[in-house]
Every structure is written in C-alpha cells, then in structure tokens.
Amino acid sequence: MATRDAVFALLCAALCVLAVVAPTAAAQESTASGPGVEPLVQQGVEPDSTRIVVEVSERGDARWEIQYWTRLDDENTTEAFRSLQDDVRANPDDYAAAFAERIASTVGAAENATGREMAATNVSVAAETRSLPDSFGVVSYSFEWSNFAAVDGDRLVVGDAIEGFFLDSSSRLILSWPDDYGATTVEPAGDETRENAVIWRGTQTEFVSGEPNVVLERGAGGSEPSATPTPTPTPGDSETPAAGDDPFPTTTALIALALVVLVGAGAVYLRSRGALGGGDGGAGAVDATGGTDADAPADSTAATADEAGSEPAADDAATSRATADAGADTAAADDTDESDASDDGEPSPPPELLSNEERVLRLIESRGGRVKQQEVAGALDWTDAKTSKVVRGMRDEGTIEGFRLGRENVLRLPEDDEGTDGDDGDAEGV
Image 1 (cartoon, rainbow, N blue to C red):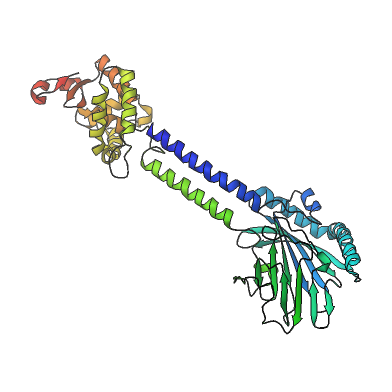
Image 2 (image 1 turned 30 degrees about the horizontal axis):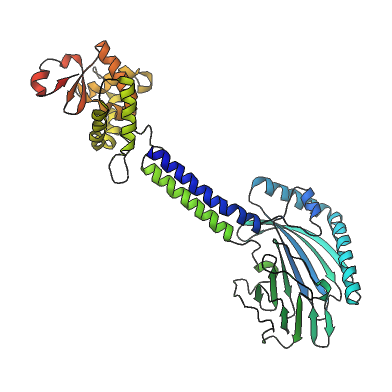
C-alpha cells in the first residue's frame, strides 16, 4: 500500500509540473507566421519562431532578412526539413516569387504612407541548418528595401515605413545601423540593446501609433538614446544580430529539466525501497539503510497465509525480518550451491530443467540436509506465497519434513528425522 501511495504521489507531482510546462511552452513556442511561410508548411515544416533582421545603411536603404526557425528535435521534423532544404535549393525561384509578391504589396503601402519612392529588389531564399548548440532548420528570405529610412543630412529616421508593425509572440525584430551612427531616440525602448542594434520581442513589446521610431545621428555612437533602454550585455556582442540571438527562451528547457530531475529522484527512491526492479517484494527488498521494507514482507506474508492457511501471519512476518540479515549475502552462494550440488560428483542438470520440488531438494542437500524456509525463497527468488505452496505439497507427499525452530520454519530431509527431538531442544513439529 505504501508503495502504491508513493507511486501515486510521484505521478501527481509530475502532472502538476506538466500543467505548468504545457501552457508555458505553448506561449513561448507558438507556430510562426508571416510572408513566405505557407510553402514551408505545405512541405511539412511548421516554423517555431520568426526573426526579422533589418540592417539600415547610411543612404536610408535597408537589407531585410526574414528568418523562419524550426527546432529539429525529432526524426520526422528533421527529415521534413531536409526535404524542404533540397527543394529550396532545386527550385529557389518558386519560393522567392511567392514571397516577392507579398513584400511588393507591403512596400507599396509604405510608399503611399510616407511619400517616399520605394522598391523591393534582389529577393532571394536560402535554407540551412544551424546549431546553438541545439539543431535548428532556418529558411531565410532576404531583399533590399530602397528608401526605407528618411535621410535628413547626418540623421536617419527609421520606423515610419512600418508604423504599428505587428510582432506575434513567436517573432522578434532586430534593427541595426552603421558603426559611425548612434541612436539618440528609440521608441519604444528595446527589450535588448547591443552595440549599433536594438531588439524588440513580440512577447514583450507592442508597437502603437508612431512606433517604432528610431533616430540615428552620425557621430553619436557614445550617447544614450532618449528612451533610455536598459542595455543587456550578451555573449554575442561581437556577433551579428542574426547570429548572436538565441531564437528560443530557456524557461521551457529549465522546467523540463526540473521535471526530469524530479521523476529521476522519485524513481531512485522507489527503487531503493524495492518498489521498482525489486522482484516480488520478498526478503531481498532492502532499503538504503540496510533494513527490510516493512510493507513488502507484510504483504507477502498475507498472501502466504491466505494460500497456505497454516502458519500465522505474525510468524511469517517475523521470519521475513529475521531472514533479511542473510538475504543479500547468501543469494549468490545459494545459486551456486543449487546448480553445482550433486551426490555422485557428476555434473547436474541446470536449474531451469528441474521441477520446483527438485530445486528445493537440491538446495536442502547442498546445505547438509536442513535449510530455513525463508532462505529457500531468497535463494530461488520465489515469493513467500509460492515457497509456502511448494513446501506444503512436498511435506504432504513426505518428500521433506518441517519443524519450528523458535520463530523460523526449518525444512529437512526425512532421513534426518532420527535424533531430531534431542538435537532441537524446544523445537516444535509442524
């Protein structure tokens, strides 16, 4: 009963953790969307996140790269991405054409809103695998957006072409600028800032009217932007924004790790208590301190009493506790004695070719004609109930005899009957 309660408690704890992990994972790793994603889904690849990398030049033009990231965490997903990668390499124009049509519509709307002549050119597509160190499949659409930013002498004003730009929970926008420029205004404040770059995440930022708004000035590299975003040092400062930013938060991974540790610790505990991999829960079930699990002998004793109907449950329970001192040390020797014992010195049949009764007789003979009943259970790896049933049948047939020595059941061969009363003192016949 205690074992079942422990297993139930462990499962409840695991379910509680999963109840937290599932919504978190769903929120952090929702399916990505955007221009050019439909052909990927049709090929069986559903991206997990989107990264939009925008590099503004001093002329006001910008190079855009929209990256769709897919975690390659199982064989099916990995194989689907390989197939997609081969298809992209073989037919890049098919993917680029559909994407270019969507982008041309977006750029046309921005041209009307800003009054600046704009165009999207040099559209291309590529598919590759990256490791961070986890493996990801990345499909990148890139193009040149002319007059993306407004140029005013040594100032660049970025954002009016994508006012109110929508970022879903799986997307992020990474904006970078030339080294000789610095940001004097960043609205809204970036969720992360780097040298000559700012990052907004869809899970943390929502652009409203007039946003994003970034003002860049030549020679202002050392000044703080007016929105005073909090700089966040990162290991990838020396890398480009596209390469240094991990597309997936680590929260889910940490929670999953905690779940694994919890389940693993519970399994180790239950195994040490004999609940997992401990056989039938008989005398061999020993806890970490060297004692027997009180529940296992009690359960097996109850089964013995119900099936045999002769020995009291209390006596069998006491026998189980007394036998635990010898269980682990004698099990290996018992197996050796059982397989090697033979009256005439000739090789004997292996244990698997002997009947239950023959195995008991061989064990008694190897012990000089007498053995404790509980030792039979430990040596043959039987339950108390099975041992009691086999022994009772053999006693009824006269193959062996049994008597009570203190609180122990002792089995002997019939020829050892002479002188038993004198030798055993207060022993009682069974």
